[in-house]
Length: 186
Image (cartoon, rainbow, N blue to C red):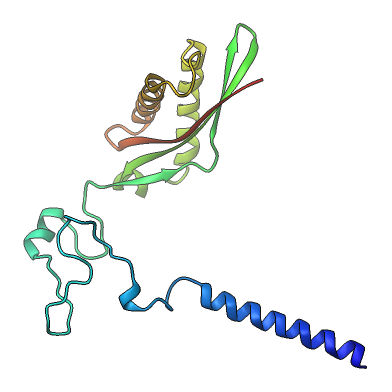
C-alpha cells in the first residue's frame, strides 16, 4: 500500500507545484501597477505614469483631437490601414528554360483600408491568385536572378505585389509588408 501511496502523493504535489508556478509566471493581472511598462516613448507626450497629484488619472485628449482623427476611444481613425495576414507564404519557382533552378518563399502582409477589410470574405483567395500570377510573371522575366539580399529586388517585389493587389482593390491597399524572403536552390 505504501509503495502506491507515496508515488501518488509525489505526483499530486508535482502537479500542484506546476499549476502554482504557471499561475505565478503568467503575464497579466499579477503585474503590480508600479511595475507596468510605460506605453509612451520618450518625446511622445506625457509619460504613462503622469500623476496630477490628486490621485486620479487625467485624459489629455480633447474633443478637437478626437474630431481630427475621426475616432473615439476604441475606434481606429478613418483612413487607417489594417494588416491582412496571408495564411501561407508564397512559393515562387525560378526557372531557366524548362527546369526549375530555385524556389523563392515570400511571407507578406497587405495593409488594407476599412472598406476592404469589411468586404474581406473570400478576398484572400482572390488576392493570392492575383499576387501569385504577378510573381510568377516577374520570375519568368528573370526578376529573381539576383540574390534576395539585393535591395532592388525587395523594392521590385514590393512594387509587383502592390500593383497586383491594387488591380483587384483599387485605392484600398495602403502598403505591402514583406516579412521574409528566402531563396533555395533545387
